[in-house]
Image 1 (tube, rainbow, N blue to C red):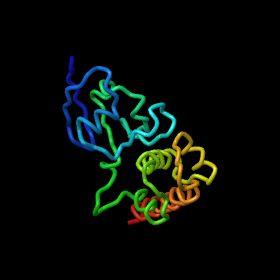
Image 2: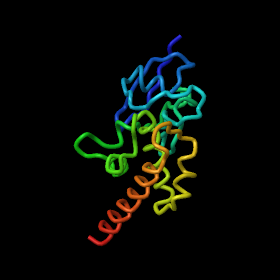
Image 3: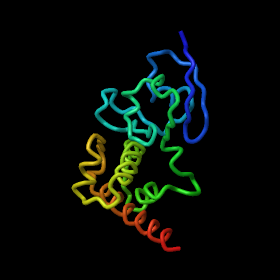
Image 4: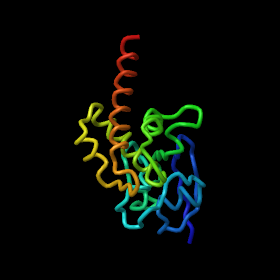
Length: 164
């Protein structure tokens, strides 16, 4: 028995008709065609499915889509665009903080929230903030460097905005 669910995804109102047991990650990928959010483990261990729900990082494989009713969801597709990358996306590209790219969307979404709460993290704080996101390729060094670089970029932009 399909039920209607209305919420916002990447700034746009969406309506889906889904089964009550449909996970948010499934609704995003299958019903809405937003395949940047990945399913990596089916056990909520890897973090490849992280999205923002009302500004908070959520493993979308642990949330029913019906729980998203009335919320604002942001996926990796809504963070930036091909012509205007989010600073975190640009930092990941600059630091080659990916190899296969499977974990990258979840890593980026988690890192963005980390900087929202801690705009000047230490290396240890970045590593702790990304706990719950698993990368099987890179060894994390470049990922941490990208997050730290993005933090500096965001601080500079904030300072420029405040002074000018």
